[in-house]
Length: 329
Image (tube, rainbow, N blue to C red; front, side, top):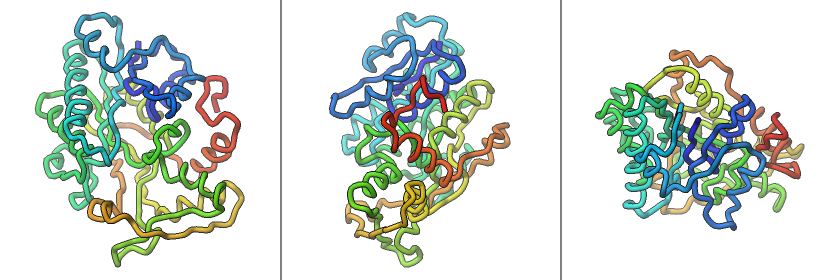
């Protein structure tokens, strides 16, 4: 049995789909589906899994030994909102919950793969190396990033990272992100802006060393994330790993690729960045994936042009934009 927390969410449901592709259906999903207005439940409609367990009872089930023959737990679930202001909620939901799951895995020799975040790197002034010796130097810019940093440091101190793999996801885009609202990718937002207005809005730069639209991010297609997680299920690599493309591309490149996938000429308008974001805004992120490569992951990663083309043409432009067991592209 493989357990995926956050299995109804973006990356979690994509991982269920990836496992289905490989013939695995003995999957237990841990998640809350929330309000029907978010329609997160639709992520699960085309997938095969054994059961779904509410978040609040999962730790108790683990403690009572009610779930047997667990081969791995992929702890992907968390409150991933970078604008969440309830620090106590993030402390309980992201840090405390992760401690319970990891402690169970270590006590029962269960493979643990968990989601950290590139938000732990803060403004990037201390680099984007996933080497353990740099962990204490990182200074997140928001409480979400700090909640992830807290667990990474706790996992290191308590020997968890000698047995588990923590994943620092960079800017992930792709199918099944539709319920995320303001936290959805720029690709998803751009696709709908193009259809509704014929143009895309990007933030102006408020730094003289970056032109408008030239702010840089490491964008990674969700199917590359699932490739990496699947490889980690099959290989005993441990420690913290960056999950990114290893290349920094601009928001202008991303928007242009979206127009191109739709067969349209780019029309981009630049708007002022809200003042509340300016002091916490990252102008450059780029995953150093050397450690992942040295661990043995050798598969080619998808360019934004190829990833966006597939996402836009095969999913966003289709009648069924969801990852579906019946359509294993």
